[in-house]
Length: 479
Image (cartoon, rainbow, N blue to C red; front, side):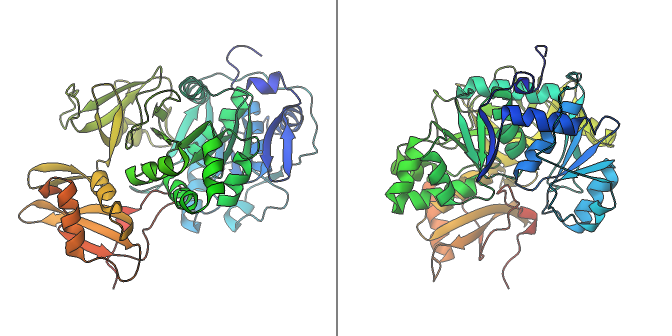
């Protein structure tokens, strides 16, 4: 096996459960047998696409590609035709792995297909590939142009899971439940490869439901991974249903990521369940770089300190390192969890990498004890107004504290006097909505006056991607 095996459990399998989707599951022995059989059919493949529906065959396909040492390209089934065509033309996969019953879109049907047969059997496991070789090519959400293929080496995945295992006391005894997409880092690397590297189990719900979470946490599950939208719904359910509150209270660890969890939802869950959600931070290019420790303080609004082995710094507009606590700066990351580069985009790689450091484009503050508090994306969440640099996140949190607000987002728009003025996009909690002036005064009472919104728009809902992040570029006033 060697000490560098990405998935040691493939080399030393047991009869313990590995992956479960509803009533369908595989043990580690069964996973080894079927993935070795599939891996044997990938020996001459340069790159493989995986139709990443939330089902057992997707997990088996990913593990088979890793065992074969073939870079896997997870394909989000929700991609539009233009997005899918871009992925195919950029990644140029030789083969598509999919469940036998999966109906593939036309663009993928033009590529040779290998169905994932859970009854297939193999014996000889391939030798372990080089740790620096590509394992996954994960496409970004494309919020700033066409999605880019992030090439993640085996080394980065192993280093990140091991660092998270240390931070979260995550072991083979844990059973993880989640309902995240299998085409992104959160649901795939953390949510599937994490348990499989550590020897634990993952129970995937297929799709998120309150009942599913309650059932699993009432059974053998010890950990829950989710995004803020899920925790927002769980908070409301826990407040009205003691059974939901009891299930959440039994979890060893509740983890939120992919976007910032609001302070109000953090506090609502803590009040209803006694549990404080642990937040973490990372990007596709760097995997997870910060995390609240299992035994550490869980401060609302913070994502914890850097993981062991990760180097992290905040820099100003000139690229100089900021050493003063609570000063806003851009996050830069270095260390073993970094990607190899963007597929076919040396120009984009060069723009984001310098001297071993990755420019994230995210801005944050860092407390004296090393905990990060995210401000947001430099391009959309750091707003320069009246000479102040203002983070959209704290204003969004303040708006959500108003009883008449169900959800909120804040952006900046050009202003001849202020440079940028703050614009609030609000989803009302009821009908009629609160007056705009009332919300402005509410924010001004909680925060400094210069942080009050100058314009308020009411919407039926905020546009979000499938990881719960608000697509701020799509915000438009209701007609």
